[in-house]
Length: 214
Image (cartoon, rainbow, N blue to C red; front, side, top):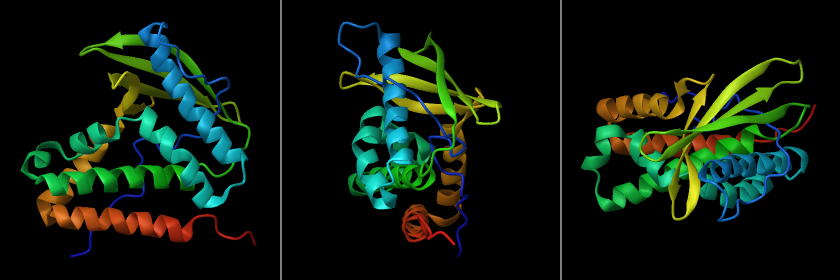
């Protein structure tokens, strides 16, 4: 059975094209909200490099791997994106899913953030949220002056603040969208079919990235 996975699968919000300056790693003595903001800023510093560096898809992917694995809680997102179906997986299936989910996320970043055209990204605030999390508010200002709100929910793991959700337009949860999409595929076609569909998405992205200019 053919499986349809929508093109909009990035937990980063595919609509993002950002710019941020001065993203230094937060010092241990800084306040939690400052550390959380620093993680978001580090992500966008890496994306600037990817967009401006002229590395090609493989080069962008390699440079983004350590940053995305550090600033995102990818194992947490992989688990929550499956909802109740995570509980029924074996340990081997869980490891495979986290790996596939993580590679898909990185491949989409490497594909989409391939050029810079004058946008800028602004961190506009942060606030504490329930369950020891922080919400970092940001604004994407496009080259035409229009802006889009992008908010990041953060939690601390292994001593660092990591992204556990992105809210497009300030309210639309990327994690909730992915959970709805992936859960429906597992319910209809099974876990193996979902993994195969995402693996094909990764392969397609690699094949189509950086098409030659005409």
